[in-house]
Image 1 (tube, one colour):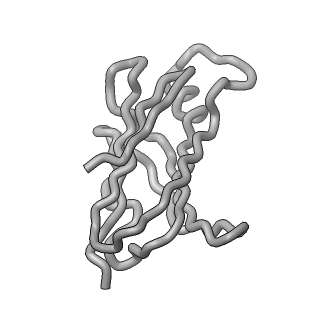
Image 2: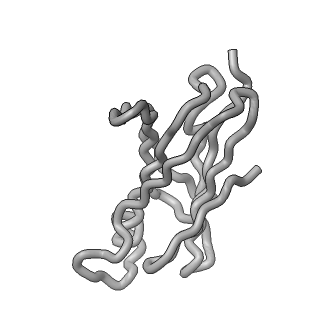
Length: 119
């Protein structure tokens, strides 16, 4: 059994706070197919209450986190635009070490985002 796991942390850089209540979907990518594995939302600290991909489900492969940025921005009363510049943010990444902790943070504003492999 693998000992690795996957986490995230979403920060709203425009407001200078954690992005609470942001929906995240996780998919496993295999060739041209995409399998839905989990749906979670961030807590008041901008994190999920449990790993998005826990140890018992963790495996080497290609994955995609999909962040519902538009719905979050709407809920925060960010001035609306139609359509939003950023609505859905997909981040596709690979897991090559089944024993490692993979942390994929998202730094978000209404007009930009960045990510990296955190610790």
